[in-house]
Image 1 (tube, rainbow, N blue to C red):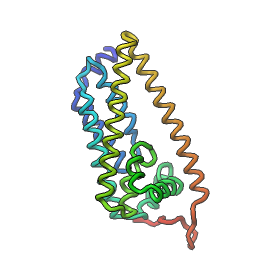
Image 2: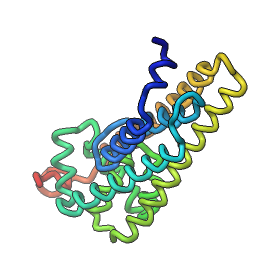
Image 3: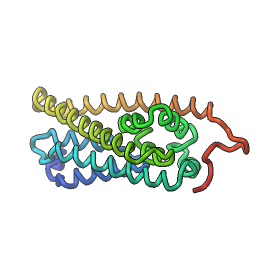
Image 4: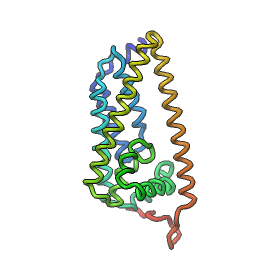
Length: 223
């Protein structure tokens, strides 16, 4: 069985559910590859022989983003900043003091804009909901930025990747998988650059983190 044959037997509902669940869990604060799943689903929808609708991919991704962020907001509001100290001790690679410092600085500077644009940045995607709740951002403002960011990110990514796939199919015909590989490599290049930039910001923030009077980082308390 070829790759094309295997792709054609994937139930469309499974693609929509997987997209929504992964993005929802990532938005809740669990570090998962939501963007990779969304791009893959959008590419599948661009293949005419595969019965995956790009509209429903976008709807599933948007729903997952909004619901996941809202749950993350509720968790952050319940436990406050000590939650990030607890997470940092157990998952320092994703929730270390430097990561929290960068996210908190961006929230302090941009407010609702950090929620909206955070949907497009891997670091802020897992922080936006819980951190907005912990910082007591009014839920109405959070919801507006959350929904707008989810629609623009999910809808824009799905549409862009879908039409890129159509162009590859039209121009490359039998070699359409070459277009897929090129698109994936380009996406990986941008992702790696963003991650390198994020790590640099995290290192800078970690080195400049303010230490409180008892010698522990702020918020480093078990919830």
